[in-house]
Image (cartoon, rainbow, N blue to C red; front, top):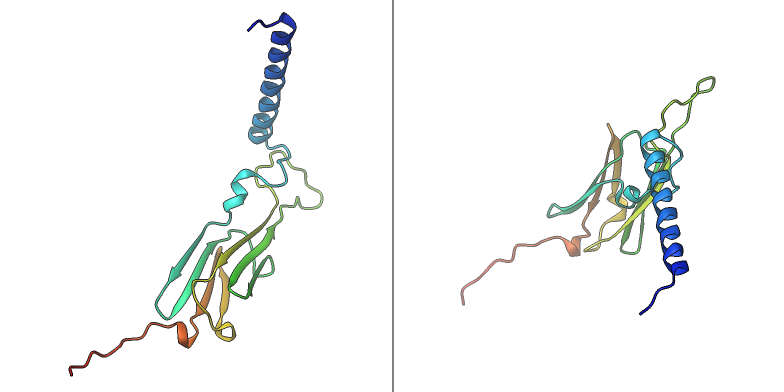
Length: 150
């Protein structure tokens, strides 16, 4: 296959543009410029742990800097959704010299492995930790079955 010099020049121009775009991204990340609206790290944020504790399910999420007003917890049929927004604002009269904490909206959903009692479900945000406790519905709770001899 023969290549024309023009094709090779175009390929080098495209690579050079890609390098410049990467440099812009690195500069924005290291100098604290404006970040994209949905950073890649935000797709798994906040970090969570979903635990089956026998009679109840518990979801524990790290939500540093968020209050109970910034987080929403909902259950629709058998899906638990945690959503919210972390806002970063500069106080009035001040200016930013470095901006590394981006504002971010998040939403994460989890299929519930069993039916839960929504009337007894609680959510508590304290010290940057959100704890959602979902008591299992009576029919979903583990039961001990007595073994009898015949």
